Image 1 (cartoon, rainbow, N blue to C red):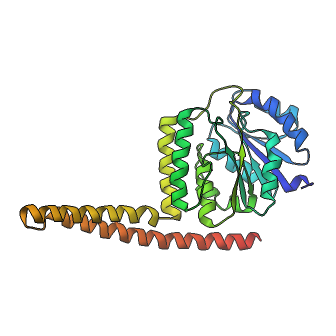
Image 2: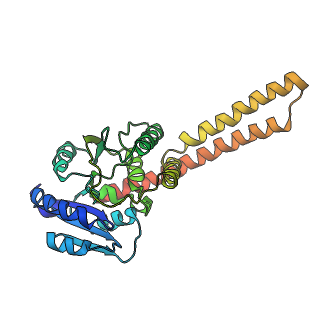
Image 3: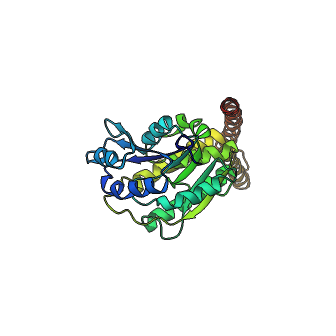
Length: 295
């Protein structure tokens, strides 16, 4: 990659002028050929001045819309066929980008910087990320080393296919990771170490946003792999109905309305899963068509 239009680096930022002042010169020195875009998500500090001093492209939201909204703005504006996404808080090291690009050039559609032990902001976040990653791995039937890492290299045309799915909040990595896996695109992980943020405070609230993570995983699961959710629920209703029927038969010698209700719930849940699977297939048709047009 020796041409600026081949590689774009998108950095969503909100009140991260201090860390950007350190990171942007390093990034410019290391990736002088790349287009660097800072998407200012309604910052109240001097982010614009820092970007001007570093001679990078500065896009600004007039008010805070969220990390995901900033990612979408940067992805739409990027000229490169390959996009690097990284955070502005200093936890993603510019020196790791060549390693991600080296793996990407092996033919992958997305390469993610997977944070190693000691890189998480706290034990609660490390544990939550591990739980979500395991659950997501089960949903897409592929190993996911780090579900929530925002440090990644993507093929721009394929990333833009899922822009309409991405939430405006912080959890775009969850959505795009599961979308790429379920669409059958090549995804790889490169181990990285993320130091603690050098200034400011995180905008993530573990309890509130942890629930949002779970809801997003379920939403993407129902969109791309609905039977993985509906079939176990249906089986649960059915087995509970069987167990309750055996209990009432042995104790009272009869079949109760509750058993009938559980069996009906099992049938309806199973049918909903089948219909959802067909809707998912229609969604894939649109993805395949847009992919061929991009080529």
